[in-house]
Amino acid sequence: MNYRERITSNPEIMLGKPVIKGTRITVELILKKLSEGSTIEDILESYPHLQREDILSSLAYSVDVISKEEIIV
Image (cartoon, rainbow, N blue to C red; front, side):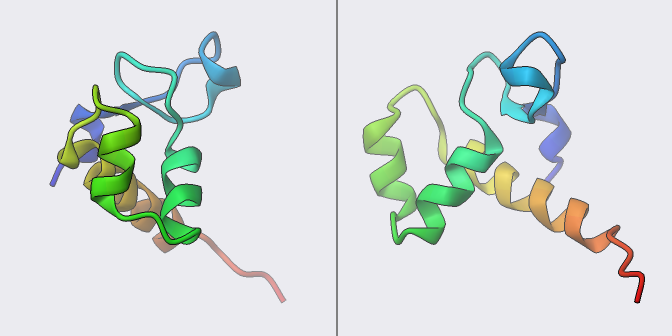
């Protein structure tokens, strides 16, 4: 899945946090909902203009960011 088709970042929207294109819904919000136990279906019900692919793209984006992290000890 190419998350770049669905995730964007613009300093003028949500202070540059990554969001679902065409919305002000942040990747952070989606991840928070999932970490609190919400299912994909719960999120889609709460935000009906989102698609399943938007949520999966948020997860893919997060994996990409974390995989590039460097830990300095």
